[in-house]
Length: 91
Image (cartoon, rainbow, N blue to C red):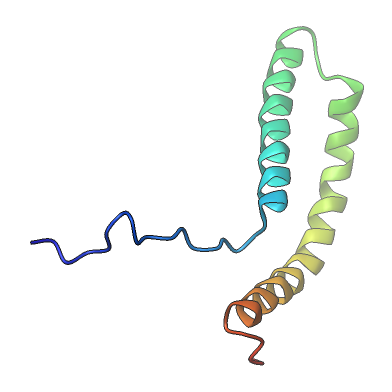
């Protein structure tokens, strides 16, 4: 006999992000896929577009900002989520 959790008693756990954040993330990833596809098509069609050139110029700036700010941002968000899940107990 299976001693696991029955389907009728199982509740989906709350995610680390809200439905709104998940939707926004999904949309951003969809845009990334579309952009990569469009870029591949534009290169085949005769070279990079102005958007491609701007994107390439902004890439080092974005990388620098992410390198400087992303670790602290992720730590802050994860810490807040952990505190929310465990009932506000400080870490």
